[in-house]
Length: 317
Image (cartoon, rainbow, N blue to C red; front, side, top):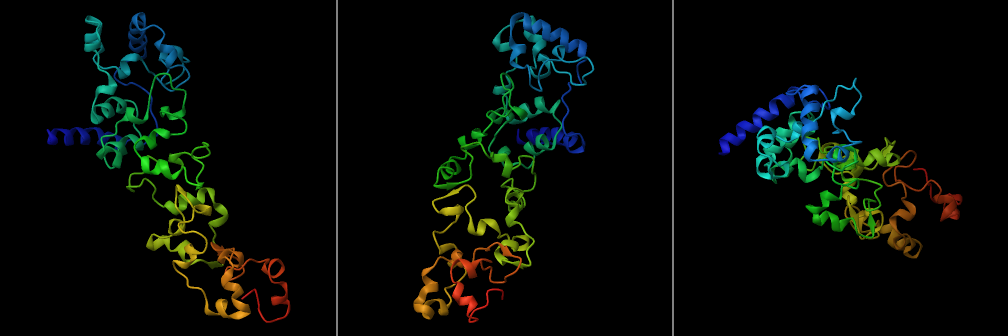
């Protein structure tokens, strides 16, 4: 049984790996005329079902422009239709939702030859949890692009319940307000990463470009992700945090994971430096164009004007 399943996966994956097209919505085993004729026969009993597909990529060919190369009919997806015509009953037609992951992938793979389809039957971690096409997509009565179950992609959170709770923390990424979606950071056609987020820091920088650099003075924790896997998530919780700015630790705790308080901060000027938050002075913590200590360029005017005007301290070191 397992061997047979492996062969079916290979049989499905090989043509998907070889294809270069990004999306094909055609049903090669049937002509347009046959699809239109058989769909009309289906609609004699299943009246109104064509309207549940209107406006989506799966709208029937009979409702498309004649020049369109996309051909879709009821029999494209509902296998076993021949027997169903002879004996119309619920038992004689295959219901996609009742099929296994591989069987669903075979039906959808008749038309959808995409990296996402190939990944879902090979390396994607969802496959190992037996997540099938219809666990994330619906076809009828669905106006959403890519036919996902909901525009906010909250169907992801039905399984990822721990992550769902993280988005309700005080500081969070705006998933609940639909400003972002799960796939903005976790593209589902990524075939290399178990987290579906290869180059996670680069995913962050797609939106947070002002922190991306390059800077003349780099903060090592920001750029060492290139070789050591650190970067953004060294300091920030990706989904949500009880601390400001998605920080893993409150107040100075994030900085103190790596840095100690300089002795001079504790002894000079009655320990004034130790009583301030690190970011009060070191505001350019992601990197700086002009200061290797990542000091606020306006620090000499904002907090301690006399310190720098007197010549005792130099801000641009």
